[in-house]
Image (cartoon, rainbow, N blue to C red; front, side, top):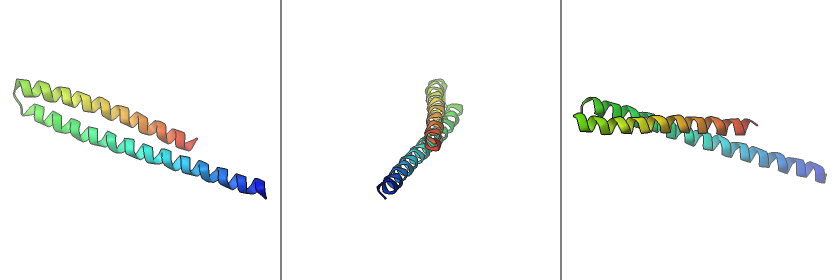
Length: 84
């Protein structure tokens, strides 16, 4: 009886941890999507700006592109942890 209760408690703890990892992955995916939107906005502004504005917005677009890729990798890693 005690073994069964312990097994149920352990499985519930594992399910809780997996749900936390999935939640973290969803948060990272949301961040990645927001960075992608910000990247596209900066690229659009760069196309309609003068030389200084173009340089500033190109830097912003590069930053958001790298941040988006980083967050996507983090989301994938979190999902892999949740699956294992």
